[in-house]
Length: 368
Ligand code: UD1
Image (cartoon, rainbow, N blue to C red):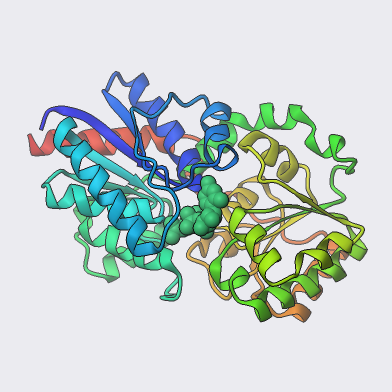
């Protein structure tokens, strides 16, 4: 196949990974196109990232939207099969662990198009997470496994993946962070929200295990009510979370708390403006665990596990689970003693996208 290399994006966490990859291919003079499945479709969950990160419009937008996992995955597959047959890509790149990632890998692999997975090898070993299924399936059918850290290489080797297929390229999301941080800081979103730099926390929550289960969500909220008495919190609310706050009638509790600011989902630059000046973050997101590690900002992960152990071993992350007492204690520890400093892991250096271009071109040249 002689067509372009295609990178598939679908949901919010994909966009900051695809942006530097697209730029690096362009700089290398290699034909490359972005294909958007439309898994996320709100302007605030999608378009703003294309604008903020200077990405071109995707060459195809499938508009699959929200649905059950089976319907969403199947709709992405049906749409992408047509795109791949028409464009005849030399290679398909998939990033991260969302439904669109797995769907794209399955379609490409059955059409015998080489697949490279960026962010391969991460494992939470928690099979209740849809992302864990997506990661394991995607890695089993990818030809080239591009990992962010050595722990991911070890996971893949332990699963029997051949060494020649694995390349540790570092963390591509950090390319985006380092590139856009000066612009993000210049926005001064904390100032506009009346917050004092270094004296507030940023909160994000969207995992089904946290927000779809009423008792768990309520436990987390009770801990947050305690934390906001000690320091202000800003909470950009994901659409799933917004819906559950209303279904479980929990929104009123948060809205009544004087020091929690609930806001709509933010664009990349606005969000990083807030995060980069925060005292600490509370989150169940994968990306924010990594971004806080790169920024040296303490992070409390409100999950029982993480597929990103390097953020705990080397970075600023502490996995605290969803026990209200533990969350309170760890937040207090940060507020009194400053929290973990950590160091930035190797190859989280802003150059992962260049290594991805090299690794994929080497792979393709070796096959031709
Ligand atoms: C998806 C990813 C998750 C990622 C997250 C980031 C999967 C399995 N999950 O979860 O790994 O961390 O994106 O946000 O792929 N919605 C909107 N507007 C949108 C998108 C979604 O209102 O633009 C609402 C819909 O009601 C939808 C719900 O949010 O039902 C959840 O969206 P969905 O794409 O199914 O999963 P996320 O929870 O966003």
